Length: 393
Image (cartoon, rainbow, N blue to C red; front, side):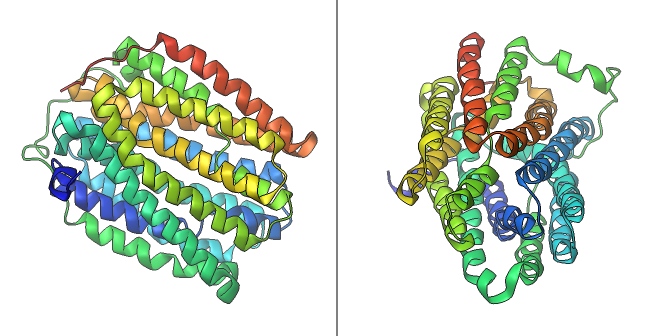
C-alpha cells in the first residue's frame, strides 16, 4: 500500500487528534504502568491494585455517557475535549505526593474524570470528520497514535525510573500532557456544529432506550466481556509474581503496546472491508487464548508470548468496537451512543477489578485467569445475537 492510499481520507482533524492522543498517552504511560509497582512499594496487595484500576475506569466511563450526551445536545465537542485533556494533564504530577494507597486511588480517579469528559466527544469528532467508508481506518489511526505514545512513554519510564525514582517520574510526565492540550486548539469542528439546537423533551435517563436494539445487545455483550478483561495491571502483577524486576515488567508492557500499535490500523481497515463483527469475534478468541496461556505461564519466554498475544487482541478490538458503536447508532446520537458504550463497559471495571484482585489474593493468579476465560466464552456465545449491520451515515 503506497503512502498516498494509506492517508487517503485521513483529514486534518484526524491527524491532529492523533497527535493529541500520542502526547497524552506518552504522558499517561510514564505514569500508569508504574502505578501498580508504586502501589506494591507502598505495601498494597493485588486487591488494592484491582480496586484502584477498576475505580479509575468506572469513574471515566460514568462521565463518558454524560459528556457524549451533552455534546450531542449543544452540538459542540471541542470544549469537552479541551477540558478533559487539561484536567488529566494537571493531575498526573499529583501522584508524586501520594504517601499511601488511598491517595493514589484518589488521584487516579480525578485523572480519569478528565478521560471521562473527553473521550466520547473526541470519538464523535472522529466520526464526523471522515467519510463512512474510512471510519474504521480513522479510529485505527487514532488508536495507533495512542499506541505510539503508550510504548514511547513506557520506554521512557524504563529509562528514567532507575535515574529519578517514582515521584520525579510522575512530575516529568506533566510536560507531554501539556503539549497535547496545545494541539487541541488546532482542531476545527464541522461548520454548524456550534449552532444551538432546540432542547429535546426526552430526559437523559431514557437515552439508552432510544438506541437501536442491536446496539443495546452489543453494549451488553461488550459489558460482559469487559468484566472478563483483566487489563494490563494484572499482566504486570503476573510479571512480578514470577520474579521479574520492575524494569523487565515495564519493557514487557512497552512490547504489548508496540504490538497493539502495529495491529490497530490494519484491524480497522479490515473491519471496513469485511464488517466489524468477525474482526471483534477474532479479538475475543485471542483474549480467551491469552487467559489460557496465563494459566500455565511461569517463565519469561512464555510471558513475552502472552504480552504479544494480548497486544494483538487489544489492537484488534479497541478501535473497531468504537467504529461498530457508531455504525449501529442513529446519526444524531453518536456521542450518546459512544458515551453509553463507554459507561456500560467501564461501570463493570470496578467490580471486575476488585473480583480479579480478590481471586488473586484469596486463591491464586490462576483463579483470576479462569474467571476471565469463563466470561470470555460467555461473551462469544452472546455475540451470535448481534447483527453485523451496514455502516450508518
